[in-house]
Length: 611
Image 1 (spheres, rainbow, N blue to C red):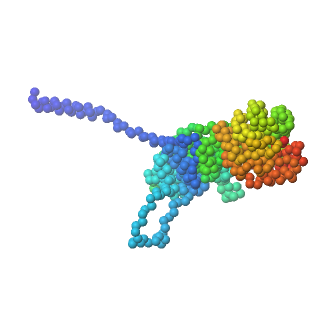
Image 2 (spheres, rainbow, N blue to C red; image 1 turned 45 degrees about the horizontal axis):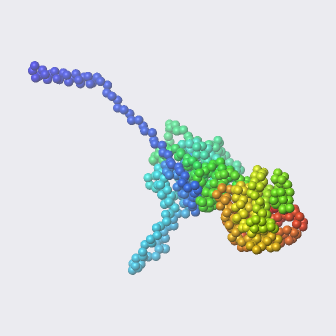
Image 3 (cartoon, one colour; image 1 turned 90 degrees about the vertical axis):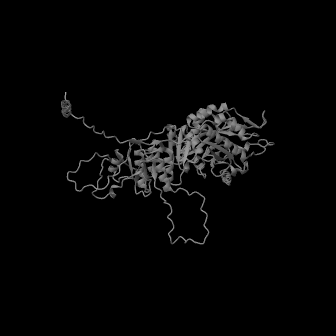
């Protein structure tokens, strides 16, 4: 075979291959699949401590502290201008997004002095040393730093926010139109007008992030509305609108960059076992919104003490929180908050509701010792009849006051005795177990019990500890009767006894520790007195322990004029923080005051007893 033929054959083969290739359908180029935008989720949390009090002198400080407490990270942050309406709107936005709410500080850093006000530098002067103290971070810088800490991708601004925000973070102004706002948030947003502007913090605390709503100020009266105006959303719902069809005859070609959008987000997982407490002060609004955005329940505690109102006691009992966070100084220290919140969470209340005695409550008591009629009317009948009699006495006072009048027993537990007894203390200590039926019947019937001590030559603290098994009941307090507190060489009915304030304060400290340790409602300590010298140093009685309420009880008897004199004398140099009690002696008063006359005494007694 010649080389040409061989080449011809090769050419033929190549031509056939090309022809075959030309007849084969090429593989289509795959079309790229569009990627779904990422969905971002923040990280909510609780402080580690059992109780935390968020610090802050301003609303912006409190908002910042709440953000730090409840969020480790947040893809979106809401920042509100100082305007109150903007802050209310921003609270709704923050809860709907599950995002922390920060506030633009009201007071911006002071502007530098003008050239005219700044003295010219003296070129001959020695250079001054630079201050060594580190400058305090200004509020605007703290705001930016918190946004960076949260690793935010976007900031929603509500109102005219002027603060400089961190670079690299998308700034998305909140639309003024409610429907446009719903579009931005990608949720239906029902509007919810506030009935009471003073309750806006409570309204924010009740927002549900899984079913968001837009809180708005109260609607103006119809008479104030402009003629011909109508509600653009009669249903009160701003809905996220479907994309609009293109206008076939647009009037103008849109120009400029598109409006910024928020990244796709989902609500952060709610941390379990936490509760935020707020007094309802408007300065706490942003902090409350941040807690709700994190999924933390909110309880309003107007006084700052969760033990005071039955509603707050029951709210904490239902929540059973493991960790409690409170906003502002009204809640005291974290240590105080811890035991108060733990006490409230028991749900155990005093007769008449709540866990703190006053204000809002007054007592009317029967005095004596069970089974001993000579010591007072409490000993004239059995426990069931005593409950009914105490209720009747209290009922006579109820029409005279708006406070709850609670029936009470004042039981003499240790009785001053003329014989010294085996222990030589001139006091007969009745067995604690003998009073258990009375205490438990009183507890079931809504009757408060005070155990009265007449210690003779024993100190009050020693005797009080004998009855600890009774004092741990939630409805049992203590009374000290200094008339029967003897010195080493004294005997009853020859001298009127007395006690030094240090001994009284030791009992107060004991009762306070007992209440905190066992999470008991506030203990009532009654100090009987009809002469100033019966309590030496009385002006130093410690009334600062919120676990104990001290009451001075005027025991004077005789004519109403004489009793009024005793009452006035006891009020001189009285310690601050005490409340007052009055005793009606059925046989010794001439005449005994009626309920109406008793409540004409000023100040109106908080505790009235009958002997």
